[in-house]
Amino acid sequence: MNYTKIAIMKGFWSILEQKNYNKITVNDIVEYCDINRNTFYYHFQNIPELLTCILEDTANNILKKHGPYHTPMDCFEPIINWVLENKKQIMHIYRSLQKEVFINKLEHLSMTIAAEYIENLSRDFDIQNEDKSIIIQFYKCIVIGVTLDWLRSDLSYDLSLYLEEIFLIYKDAQHSALKNLKNSQS
Image 1: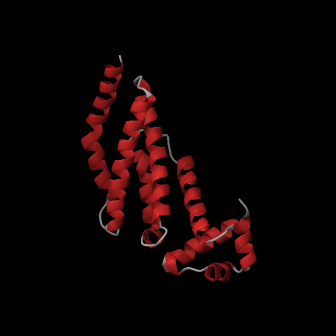
Image 2: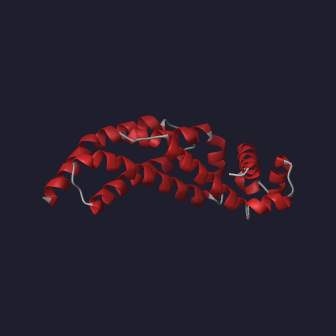
Image 3: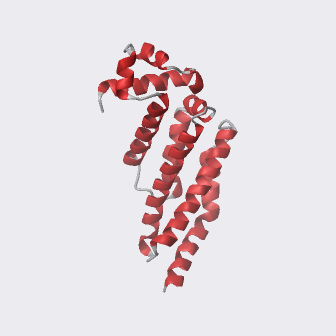
């Protein structure tokens, strides 16, 4: 990725720590980065595209950096940590008009991680892809639902502990589900 594009992304992220998303202008970004407007528009059409690029880049980095995913918490701990490390920015995005962009990227990342986890978990079972998809969707829905609740509460509780409890409750259920799926397909 080009140095100027990275600088714009980092500059925007720094501004977002201090200022609500809806109040950030291209002028704020170009002043912060000491570039001209044409340079900004050479790399990004607008601020929503810039945000999308940052979220995609972050998701790709999380996927590359972490794994393999042997437990549900291996899957979601990196996302939780990233949110906590960037709490102000995340809350500014979550409370903005771009909330849906953030939620969509979070869903995609959760789905990808859940798919890798279920693939690893189901290696000992001969399970059809349609059935794996159901389990993957189930995990994604649990994580997204709990994460959205956590965001609505302004990150007021320890999501890691909460998810650990949920996954502990479902631990035996996931193995049983995989065995039941294998047996039903035999």
